[in-house]
Length: 235
Image: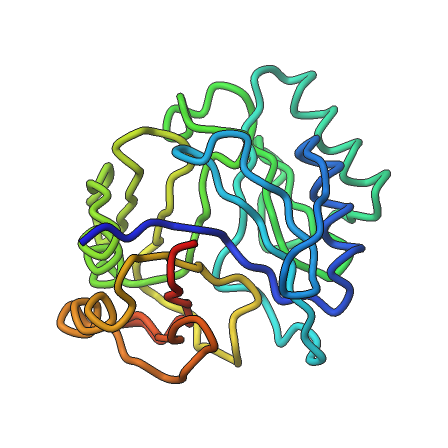
């Protein structure tokens, strides 16, 4: 059964603000979303994430479970990305990085953390503008998502894992232990699409997922680490 990543969703207090921020950083056009939020369509649907910004009332609980690692072709390109982000309302933040590290740690206007990675990073070579969705998570959850999406493992060492579409593009990675305590609903979550929601939900449950709720066009689940994701009917 075919299941694919339809979107990466941001829970947002101000979806338009966040969409315009990320549209400016990634140099993508903002579009309206059928849910009443905003979206940034992927430039390449096989290798990139469509981003959806969905309205929610609750504010950010604490550090996100996942964050973007943005790629850079040159040192000047890295600085240009940082400058765009700051001009659009981003800010520098301290997450314990040392002065000699080459990446720049920032947050968007609602505090969602992200990194602008220096040029020449081997792990992010031949990916996309969003080089990776870097996540706090166990080795088991990396194995789960590899089977769930049928994406091969491209890193599996010291309990750190990463997967990538067979077509290339953005990776999804998990840092292994220690895994931070989950404080509340994740601000970022994947939305998967499939032709048969019930059958696919059953398959995901056998892999270690848990169904937690019903949606108008599908179901909400959690992965083995308790991270929320959505499974909806393809359209």
